[in-house]
Image (tube, rainbow, N blue to C red; front, side):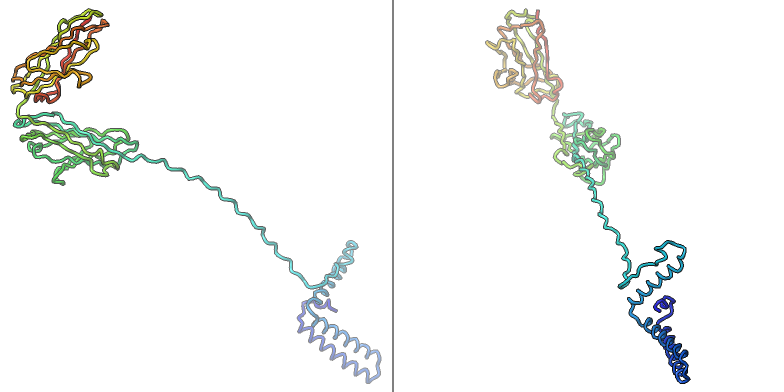
Length: 396
């Protein structure tokens, strides 16, 4: 009977059918009972039993109906598989108990891959930019009353291993004595601002300076410099931080131009007797020095002349003679220091001074160089370019 549940008819439908069948069965049973027809009474009884079975199946618990459904499925398979194997003909085994849903398999947990750390490259340290300024002048001495053209030359060097940035600004201090006669400038990639800053000319180099290199030279031409009775100082400096510079200690320079009221130019003159000595033989040698003033203004007293020492001079018994001259043998390890206490007249000469070497001995055939040098500024000298005189003592 329970197999009828597989027809898909609802429980309410089966209750109606079952109830109707019971009613019909009772009516038939009573009718035939009254007419004493046993066969009909049996048929009515059968209807009652069938209806009861239908009612029981419709109200049976869910697990029982599931079991019945499984049994019906097995019988149906047996009926339809008639020509199959023996197992098919016997149908599926009866499934008991509650129906269990097949669990949906869960995906297996996936272990995330261990992240691979990428090493961070250590940046190469950058050498701080260091710009240095240097200067020179074309004339170091000027007459105080004579306007003189002077070139003030500036360069910027990059002493670091890192290229500088641009632009690079150099401040050149304005100077009344230097500017009085006018100012001009020239230099590749340099520009000059003469008006913005009342105290400085602003010179700008427009390009970076490569590591370890020097900028092109900037030349500032002061057309007519008059010192007005005192020395002249020309100064310049790199603007702090300009060009990426990080070191301000080497950013400033000063060039001094000495002013003089009269030009003095002292020149040493020298001679040696004899001019040739025999090597290996001690010889008396006399070396004589005179200071000449080739300008038209007398020198100041105190001209200093240094005469070079030599191993060949024997070192003993040396004498120095000359009016107005004194000698210091020991203070300078390389030279005998001679001092002339008198002024040297304009276009004149000092008294001669003679150094006598009693035992000059030359061990080789090479000539010996004898030299005398006037100290810079000594005696008021204004031109150090001609302050040294050299002669050769020959050897035979």
